[in-house]
Length: 345
Image (cartoon, rainbow, N blue to C red; front, side, top):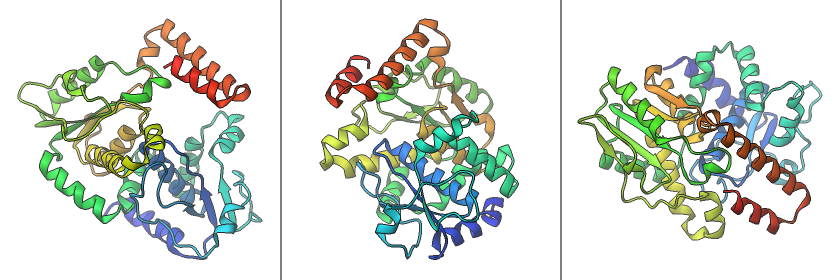
């Protein structure tokens, strides 16, 4: 049993499964699986920070199908949950029984304090539950273990874990490709390979589990001598914006939900990880590895904006590109915005 199980589990269990607790309804956006899981983890942290049950209106996260068992008990009707006033970050004893989180509205409110919502929550948690920076680094990992995934997902995962041989003597490597270049240029494979070899000098891991959107990812990863690369060739990879593809092709949503779940969970089961600090799969898996007692020297999250940092020209390009897209969203029709997005990919 960990300190989290002793300190936080009774509190979270009581908040989430006692019907009469006050509620914060957490918004769910049609984004990638990792981003949606991060939003659920954020909701649970907000629950712990402000003593409210985190309620999610949908058991699944569209366009993905349901993979998580319902995380709360509630006797509030759907109408009350949908029409609740916004959460006020300054709290107050006269706050309504039900409030809702609007993530972007909350970010606007915190902008004056130069804070992200995630950092605001961490600050509240640290003060409320006496959590250290080391505790906070492990918190998402503990929450991932607190969440209950559907039994059929867990059973298939057990089979895939045995088939692929992923375990604590495996280094997880997340090579994020697909649509990530919309917000930042891809992290060069050379930096990933450098980190892999640096870790191997002090920890001679037996294998590398490679998770990537790119079907050719295994061709750019350079494993140390004697280390095998585990790259699941039975998996379909599209190297695109997965959630947008599923909106257009809902028939493959079940398949792609499991694939995303499998990759994130297998990364989290490794003994170490190399990824980037702005990719949800890598950050959640890293937190879980640390929570399970993993050595921090085996966890390397590279700067997701490394390519921008090394090139003023690339930096300028992405600043202009993102500003153009922001301006377009305010003044142009949706069809024109899609054209700009395609042109600037």
